[in-house]
Amino acid sequence: MPNDFNQPVIDEFRANRGRMTGYFEGARLLLLTTTGARTGTPHTTPVGYLPDGDRVLVIASAAGSDRHPDWFRNLVAHPQVTVESGTFTYEARAEVLTGEERDRLFARAVEADAGWATYQEKTTRVIPVVALHSLAQGGPGTINATSFGEAIKVVHDAFRHELTLIRGELAAGTTTLGAQLRVNCLTFCQGLHNHHTGEDLALFPLVAERHPGSAPALARLREEHERIAGLVEELRESLASTTDAAAVRVEVERLTSALEAHLTYEEEELVPLFDAAA
Image 1 (cartoon, one colour):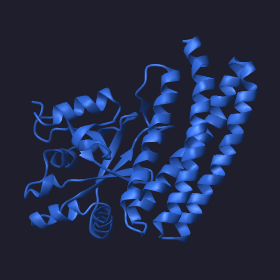
Image 2 (image 1 turned 135 degrees about the vertical axis):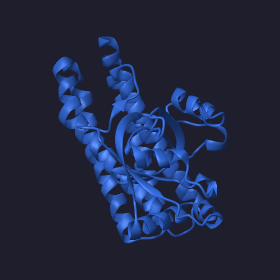
Image 3 (image 1 turned 90 degrees about the vertical axis):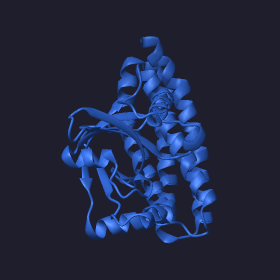
Image 4 (image 1 turned 180 degrees about the vertical axis):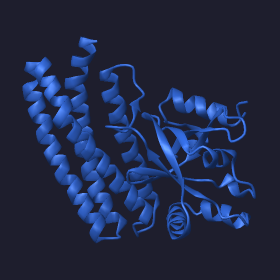
C-alpha cells in the first residue's frame, strides 16, 4: 500500500523528471524501487543520494530510528533494485558497504550535511551506507523521454540541474572545499566527458548522414566540445591543487557559462531536425 507521505513526492518527481518544489527543492533525490523481503512485491521510496563516480550512495538513516528502513531490509534480501534519477531509469545492484569504506563514506556524507551525524547520534545501530552500481549496458539507462529531440533536452537539463546544485553547494559551503563537493564536481566532469564523447562518435555522424546541411553546426559543436573539455580539465586541476572553494567557484562559473551557451545552441540546431523526422 502506498505510503501517504511518499506518494505525492513520487508523483511530483516523476511528473517533473526529478525537479522538486517545497521541502525537497534543491535536494539530491532519487526513487529507489526494491522487492519486498517478505511479500516479493515492488516498493518505491524517495531517498537522498550522494554522487560517487560511476555509482551513487544512499544512506539508510530512517531519520535516526533504531530500526532499519524497510527499503534497506528489502535490498539486503533482494539486491537488484530499480533506480529513477529523473532523467534515467536503470537496474542496479545494491552493495552494503562495511568497515573502513563505510566509515570513510559516512564521514564524507557528514561533511556535506551534518544531519547525517545527528541521525547517527539518535540510535545505537550503525547506519548503513549502500552503493548502487548500474547494471545498464552501453549507457546510463533508459532516458525518460518519448522522442529523440525530447531526449536531448532531458539530458541537457540534467547537466544544467547538476551544475545548479554544485554552484549552490559552493555558495553555501565554507572557504574550504569539502571532499563530497570535490567528488560531485569530478562526477559531473566525467559524465559530461562521456556525453560529449558519445555525441562525437555516434550522434553527430548519424545527424551528418541524414542531414548533410547540418555540417556547419556540427563543426561548431565539435569545436565547442574541445573548448569545454579544456575548461573541464582546468576544473579538474583546480580540484586537485586547492581546497579553496572560491578558486573552484571561478572555474565552475566559467564552465557553466560555456556549457549553457553550447547546450542552447545544440538544442536550437538539432532538436528541430529530430522533431521534423518524427
